Length: 92
Length: 487
Image (cartoon, rainbow over all chains, first blue to last red; front, side):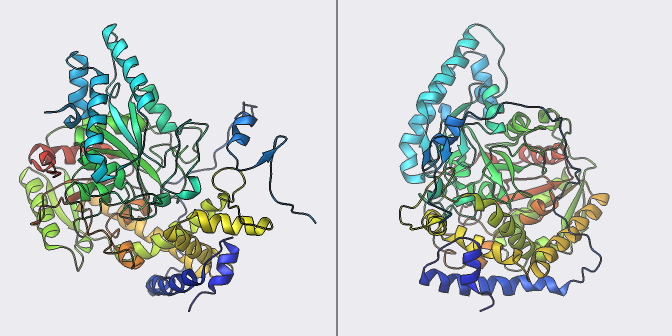
């Protein structure tokens, strides 16, 4: 297998079942092999493209504008308390 | 002819002449949905109450003698990837099953300003990852031409709804072909605009350097009308481009005399369905007969498109989907002891198989030690592919190809083989990588009676030219008038 799937899953914060690890492992092996055809091309000195349309940095005036109302934003979160998102204890 | 069968421009004419009301049209559409959607399964949610309120408002305007725009009072469907204020937006995913946005995406705001009527939200592959809607977290949409076949994807709900007359028109999104391939499978018209033509604000992100919103319609004229309605610069999307939006209707002339059409040999790949090849070649012959100048061109890096795409789109997706952590919105698992488990279980329970597969792949190609070999390499070959198009467009005005290598395949046929599924996008992906616009329109049934799509690609921001060629083709054929029997 090309990929240490448990390590990658940990990086992606994704719990995988034993069955998923196996089928994904095999399928991704096949996909990565397919992708290796790119190595046939010499790309020395070729600039990578991140956006197809050339664009410059976008700046705007530093003006204060209204944000979304706090109640609305918090209102759709799974758990909240006193104007905060609530998550399990982080610092012991 | 029932009101549900009308196009945007036909219904608009009747509204203006006061021969029908928007409420009557909206009622006809919901009746139609009630009759056929049990079989098609295009809609995830209907928004009737709000739709009738919008329709009545337009009707009052007409009664008062006020002028109305092209889209006013027209019932449309929305792919469920577009954020709608106060209306659930699932993106086809269980992780967003209960997500109700508190804002409208820019295209939604624009359509509201133009007083279009929203019938409901349409099914899709989860997070737009798929070519069949089989990856939807909720249901598989059926192809109206053959219920045993896929409608294409990821905008399969949108294309099927338009083909089955369950809406007058719809919006879809296209990252690697997700508007054009379903349009091809369902025998309707679909256009992916130039990257930056339409604002992505309020479009749930999949691969941000490739995603675009676009129209799926019953004919080319409707496509031009809906495209005019959603295009334009938006300060809320830093990648939208400040280029003047023409009224795309003015490009609808029945004339291709002197238009230079390029035919890339590389697109007539091995394993292409014979009916697809025949139909597309006949379409090219027709355009030639109508006065177009047809020439052979080469896009030599076409064969690398799928490899480039599935590195870049999964890399971007793994980053974009990191936001689904069970903290700010969406689903949160109830089985966890600590924060890390909350993340990993929320994502394990909330995401479907294909999304997990792509997150893993994307994380891998971006990870230390592999970034250069995969992501950087793919981004470089993307440049070579862009250069192919730039060179080609020095010699031709548009490029004509098939949209997909085969007509719609059977449900279940490719589920177990992701690479096979990925390869079905090979003819649509290069357009997204290059950021150019392209349209798919019907060019003939296969021997089995299934729709086939003709793809026309254009230069950046030259949607007008592809609409002109598509309109001319449509005016001289009747493929777009064929409708599924829906027995």
